[in-house]
Length: 195
Image (cartoon, rainbow, N blue to C red; front, side):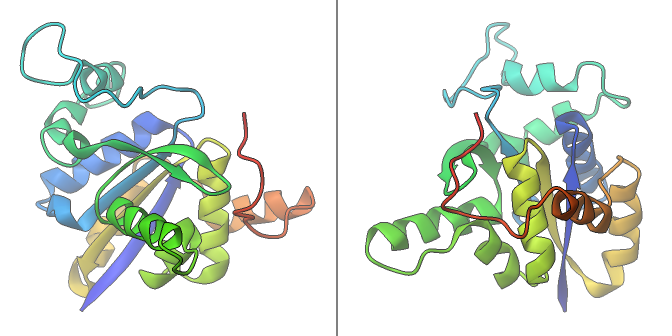
């Protein structure tokens, strides 16, 4: 049986390094998703930036500079090669890749066609993330964080959780408490995205 493991990272580099760790562990790219706020325009949405003509996107290469293992380059060939821009209600522009991005894209198309409004909270809860946590994760992305979500078999979960923990994810309960102490109650998809 598959389990969904989700982590929020304050550092985009930490999240990308964690994604690469999953790749080294043999986790299929189809089971990994990454969603990062693009409020600082770090990703411009152009299909490729390869000024050094080495066959790799220079943005992915640049993200790895200064990282502890420098391993993001390998991940760029898989999951990160699928990065794309999406507009998520209440969050604004995000850079996303993987199955959650596909879910969000489908939800957006359904909403345009008159279907139910979904968004990141719905995508996460549909994947098995408790609703309260899904709200905190969504708010974390809204505030500039990077979300990494992976589907693994139950027997692999402890090993994957330990690996993701090495890259300094936020403590989701503590983060939720911090948000609530400042008056936040839940993610609001109708809120104006942060500037």
